[in-house]
Length: 471
Ligand SMILES: *Cc1c(COP(=O)(O)O)cnc(C)c1O
Image 1 (tube, rainbow, N blue to C red):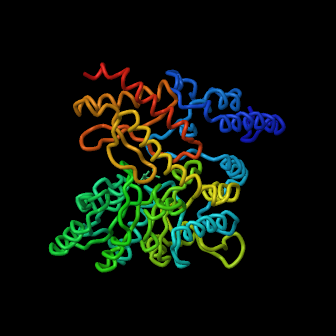
Image 2: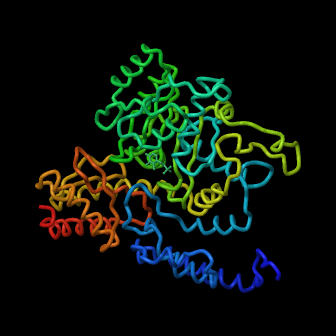
Image 3: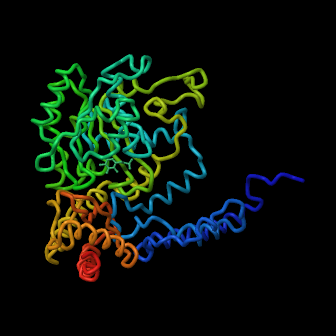
């Protein structure tokens, strides 16, 4: 018996199958408004059972493509998810042919990654001494940044291991990614000080008191995590003030700018929300949220290349570099993060910027901010109530403010589910002052104002429809 080959027997057959697939995919993205999230059929797991074989391209077209997560649809504003770009096709197809391993060595993708990082560095206002590495997302970028901070503070930590006396400071409402990073680094989340906020930003007096208290108890303040765009309400810390304080205290300032860092590209007044971000020691941000690039792609950006390198670089014999040949090339991105083997994240960002131009992204980000304000107007026009003022692209509201808190919570949750199932419209929910509210985070370049007007009218109508069911 001969073993089947790991390549197509019929390249021309594959070519025509791929043309069919590409046509279907391009149609699906072009007509994104006709392809909302739909509940996966109950037998989907059976349909995906390994070992079925057959017409794989046909199965992908019929059984996989329709059951996406909905974030390509113009009325998708749930959680904070990006909307994907047509340029992702270019990058994805080329990436499949190249099978790059971006850990290092002398090949083109490292230069593409370098170009993407350098562009972002300039947009964030970091100097030429900065460095970065593309990662799965802000969660991993946070681990990388906090490890760089720790190695700078405790140069022997790579050899000797962790020290439980290091403390980290962030606004209450900081994304769980920071807590996870603090846990993963062995600091323990008991060492994460959640500082109260005032007008949506970390309260500086409380922060100073927490730092003083920790020093008085023999602890070493390691990092202040500023937030640009908090996940619940879209709050922004005052980065100039945090930077002044961090400099005075000799503490590393990290910024979680997962989506909000991109207000750097927006017009006034939103651009001002991230004033001072250029003074941070590190930034974690995502391309897959508010730069709309396909999943996944985030960036750890570190102001001091030496500090970044000191935290991760290691070249055992089997990774020795060379002056020329394939083992040449510099930098090797494995020296700046956790992963040695690395897929091709850089090309989709590069294709996006080169196909559409930076100005198109600036316009889309600005438009999303204006749309959140428009949504807030619509909410109030329909007699519903904002849970907090809209700062940039997040609008959080409750549909029936006249009801008791628990009934509002139940109703808002029901409305979210109902609209997902019936109206191709995706809000998520979050809790504000003990009430589960509807939340829209608009990181969607396909959204237009009429989508928002329709959706808010649907919310109001659905509230009337379901009100009786929560009493
Ligand atoms: C999404 C998000 C994160 C986590 O980023 P991932 O890319 O999902 O890992 C961290 N912080 C904020 C503010 C976020 O919105």
